[in-house]
Image (tube, rainbow over all chains, first blue to last red; front, side, top):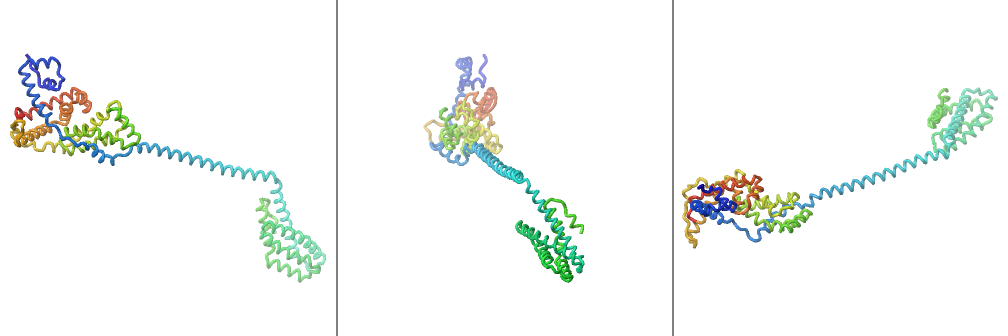
Length: 252
Length: 190
């Protein structure tokens, strides 16, 4: 007869043995004795229970544990924060879009207005060019007069009378141009025309210009640099207006 | 108990941190008991309780609601205790007194109507049993505690220890063998 192994006795102790093992233990005195010894040993271990906790142990554990816990909502707070960031980004994007549309509209409106102005006043630029050309012609004629005065023969009365007549015409034109330059807020041109007007007025309004008078006028022109100033103005105005360069002034 | 636990878990996951306190209060006793039985040290067992509930809170999203929270946190505590046992320092602490004379463990236990001498003997028997327990490997000790003191089935033990059921059974058998051998001098005294 084969006796039970210790493992089988252990299984029997824990109630996991088969019926055959249980029957053998009851029938076999030796195995029954061994099982009794095993039960005594294991029961002795079972009887030494561990330390018991007080009723408020759970509260104490929770009190010490609680400060170490981060609320689970903070885990979702990341998503919530991301959601808020996303909303902020969308709002910022919308604001940028609106701002872009606004400024784009204004820019487009400005261009459209400019185009409309050009369309409404097609002769404005051309008119400016005409003014410049006319003024350049006036300055050209004035320059020729001043050069003629510079090289005139004081004893030639016919020539002097012709120069005086030209000076009177140029004086009338110059007064108009000076007034227009003042209104156009061009102080340089207005100043130069004013100086020129003084010379033209002296030549035009004195019917008995003596050679000494002409010499004095020429000296005044040279001293005040009116010719040079007129050349500069003639060179400047066409460039500013985008028109042809004043090659005439440069050729003198 | 399982359904209320599940609703509490849902509340905790929804952000109610304090709801976790109910779970701690309900299960801290059983968690401490198994931790103390495995680790054999009151202070360490209390630390394991804290660690187990902290880990449980941190992994609460992975809690499968098929099982009860008690079973789940119990397994975490057993794992924490097992890890603690596997630390060299802890093992050395448990093996303190190993060099004592085995003959000194042979004691006679008096009748149950205890006098001071019998109380002393009972205490010495308890110390000898504890020492014998500490001589087991972490797996053997844990398997034995779960089977013998916690009345867990072999399948549960196998699941907690992440081993095969037969391996869990063998661990229990080896533990019983070792304990009986260690406690043989006490036989017939209890």
